[in-house]
Length: 174
Image (tube, rainbow, N blue to C red; front, top):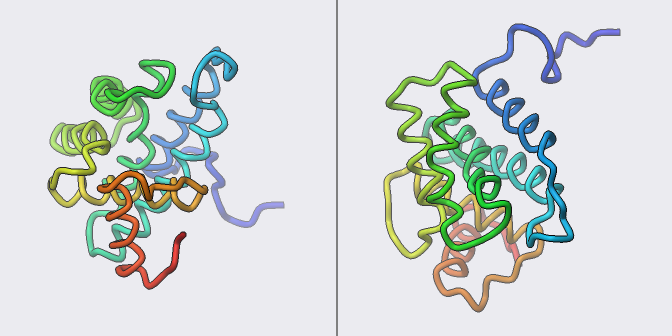
């Protein structure tokens, strides 16, 4: 039985879904020992997909390019693969891999690729102000983590972003 939906299958997938498939396939192919690192493979899968969807929604709300935002969401923590775990430079260290994945998935211009990879590489700089995509990705990262139960009250810049998002979205997150 077919409902007429693609469900991530077929030849007519848009560039964002092709990218999401590529990232998921890459992560699933990793020999990743959760017992030896500080980030669960399952967490990374869930976080990248939920962050990409939140990026999509927040971009729509802010009248920004949802495809670019969604692509950034699915790639923002790709540096965790490079380092096999969390460390303070994981965002910056994902820049080259993000560009490589975008080129392989196809459909993104060189300018878009640079913009996405750069925003992903700056998502950890919560204390700095960047362009619309960088700011959106920082907001998405804290929003997704907060909705998964992270307590950012000890981290001034993260906490401030969560509180600003509560106002923007009309929600009480924590």
